Length: 289
Image (cartoon, rainbow, N blue to C red; front, side, top):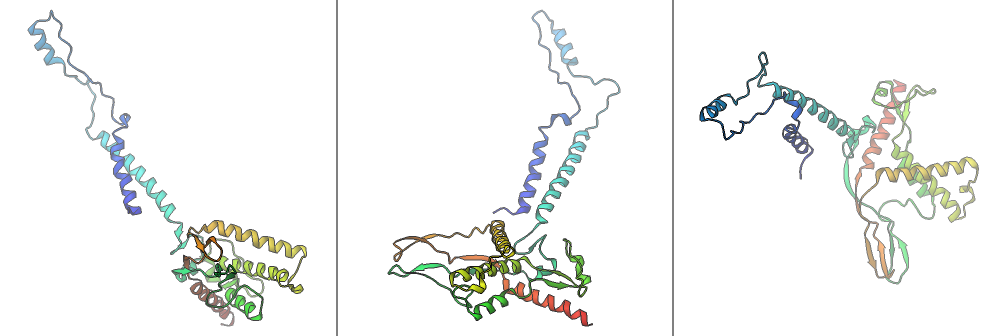
């Protein structure tokens, strides 16, 4: 499989061959061929033509044999610079496993990539009964309980982290000083997205499990729910995960059903979460120093 560098080099190797097609780079030069000898010409005339059929350059015209190559070198260097600049700009966006240019700079050392098998797929018993396999770990959906609410609170933690004056310069976006304590605050979008999922969970639970205190049909709350739905839509489109979800025949369902429990390539949320909570606490600790 060719590497980005090999592709970049190949384009420059092709450039030299391409330049031979640019005829305008060479100084104008007239091509001459020997005149045809007519039947009534004498052998002496033929010898005369053989001696004079070479084109003589006009007096004062001097052409350095290095002229076309100097022009080629100039153009080659120019195009090389443009292509290199283009590649650097494209590569400067970063990557999933090293951090994109718009990721939090201070969080990039916490990025770790691993393979994670998703859980919670819809399955069928052989008798046709549908069920959901929660998988190991705490339950984040289902009949609401205090333990579930605590699990969500631990998962999200502090949404907007504190940063010091010295750390402000690491941000490429506007971030304002807090009026209460003079610290700057910003949150990884992953925490906001999780908050949106939890907001939708609580709203749905209010209707599914008939919990009046979780039902809020006020205008502001409706706007909040709509914001979360539309934000998560954009997030899914932005990431565009290409992990295949195959259809597999289920005896219980009597047809092919999606097998959602596939291995995905993920950033380690635990590592990022630990960095975030430490960053927030360290910044708060500076207030007492």
